[in-house]
Length: 510
Picture 1 (cartoon, rainbow, N blue to C red):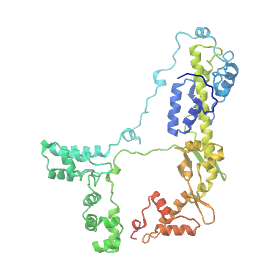
Picture 2: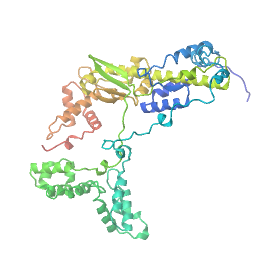
Picture 3: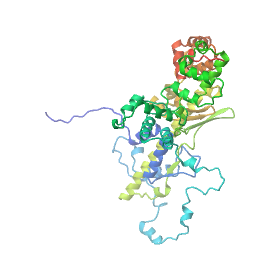
């Protein structure tokens, strides 16, 4: 095979490192961005937190970026044929004018610095204790704020260790606790538990059943039940026997729980022979029980959201601004930047040049992210002003293409901006994706947002007669009266998304 040289002309898209960095920062959430900024500050000595300028969240320090950049472009040597990137991006590394504002020569400043510096502060003046002393009688609870909450398994194991029983029963109890899920229900049968024990222990099913009954008396009430009926019965047995309808509630849970789940109140009255008022009281008692007893025990998994955009109404106008607390403010350290010397190719000076250039790119990427986020948030507020004024029923149809055209960007960019970014409004905190929805046509040729239709379905089911709840067909007919053409299956799909049960399960005794 003969080797030859050929010349080809073609086009291809090349992403510069700074463009890749800008795209990566654009899709980061607030918490991820804070971590990224912290890592950049730790790795680049040219970057520092701007703790003084509280108003400039999306603008870098002009003295530390623009001035240094302009000076660098004037003084640094540029190889224009080095690559395909623009001159503004590939111009020589930024420098500061070390002749006018920079430090003196190395030998001059070492003569001015004494060998021993005076120390006018003590260790305690600089490093304060992590926690201030707490006066007696204050509301500070160290255990509550710094302690960790036990899981359900730890809670049950603690009670098991306090219960006097034999070593074999302890082994059985430990196996039972391991078979309890986070909701407090058993995930294994007694036969399954028996297969996991050592055959030399010769454990009988009656022994497992006896230990299980003891654990079912542990806190929380209803724990270690094998099904919902047993869970509710355990809780009913722990109530005061003086309750008037306690026996009827136990009988209903033990024998007719399927009829209660189907809301077949006519069959329940016939089976239990209870009057309507008595049956309503029994159902209220059963509904006061906890079908998931383990849900209240364990660590709190609450996730907190930091909004990226703040929206408020002032003097009749909706104002959109970035949250100043969403990300730390960063700037270039002028002291380090002034150490960059012109026409110096030493390793130390080259290190400073490279870090200054990276710091400038990082600040530009942050600024681009903030400007894009603010621009997209402003357009969303302009389009969904009806939602801010009147609620979900006034939500308008909106897709990514609409915002992309409004801000002159690609849809993929809008998708990155609206993912894991949140907006704080007078109506709550919403992800930017929430404001986008498909549309449904109306009889008059208009369009209605699917979010608005779901809000209408939720409103209709909340105001319906509990004795005769609205069916999906009836809801579709009511929406048709409002010129909204929605099929019955579409109503059923939206109702499922809202976690609203069907009409037969929404039937109530009032």
